[in-house]
Length: 116
Image: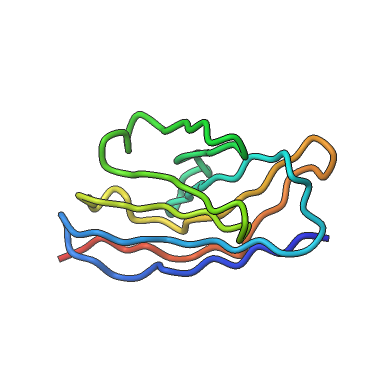
C-alpha cells in the first residue's frame, strides 16, 4: 500500500508563486511516474505535469513556462513549483503515483486559490 501526502497549497495573489510537495511512502516500485493533477469546481480533473523516475517531464499547455515539476527519488518526493499564478489555476491539486506493477495511487489533495 502506498500513501501520498501533499503540502504547500494556500492562497496567493495573481502573479505569485507556490511550491507543492508530495511525499510517497509504503510499497513503492522504483520505476514509476509521479505527477500533479488538478480539479476546479464544476470541471473534470486534468493533468498538470508528470515526471518519470528517469526524469522525463510532461506539462499541460496551460502551465508550460510557468510551472516546473521535479523529484527527489531518494526521498520519494515530487515537487511542483508554480510561478506567475493566474486565477484560473485555482483548483484542488492532487498528487499521483503510477507504476506498471502497482497501479495508480492518489493523494488527498491540497487547495490552491489564486485571488486578489
